[in-house]
Image (tube, rainbow, N blue to C red):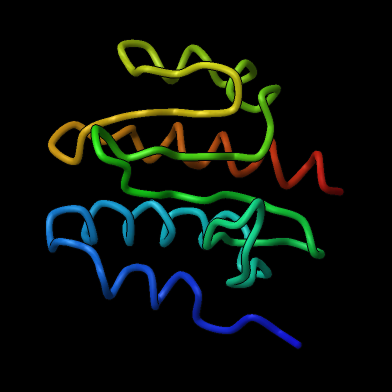
Length: 116
């Protein structure tokens, strides 16, 4: 069974401010890796590549979390995350102050290369 529309369904339930930011991050990720598909990874709606999690972006109670499914990805692009709350495998930010498109591109590129 193929999981279809999981990101779209998730986005439909978000507040407009959160939806706009999260949709944008997924759009940037798709520019980097057009072969990415909607699916789930670690129980989260995510873009997947060859059956592995590429990136997920979720609204939590206190922030938006971006998950590249790789602590190494976060470490590798650390210079692009200055001033952002980032640690092992997670990047946290507020909708009013999202991470840069360059950081998203770098995270997705690193993770894509890890997946191979």
